[in-house]
Length: 150
Image (cartoon, rainbow, N blue to C red; front, side, top):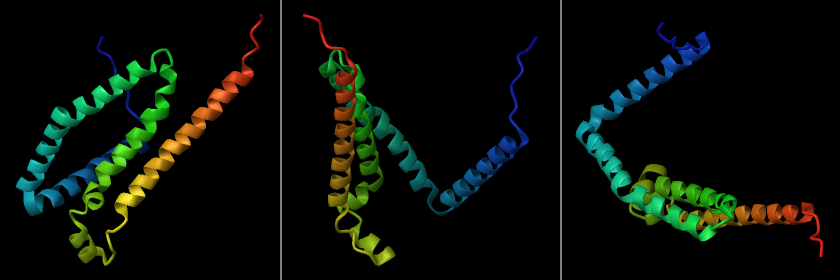
């Protein structure tokens, strides 16, 4: 007897079909202008991620786990803000680095100044919020713990 593949509701199937149609349309429009440049960008991004970024952040995470020792549940208080900050840096890197400031100003009429400062402030806020949650959790844990008998 062959296993049955579960089929979603008609709404799920319709949404999936619409998602594929939209992705196909976007792909056709994207490849229409400069298909070689887009293909090179995708291949380059994959190679950069797999050969450079993945070993880098996996090594940093491994070092963080070793440094944490027995307190591995505390690692998330560093992992989450670091991952969010890295994602924001990745998305906004051209503007943070200032490499496309002229093109940005021509396209939007706005100045590209301040992206680096805002990213640093947002990173500080992420780590500060994480530290605040960490302190609250540690205080609750010590408050709920019964006093040690002498």
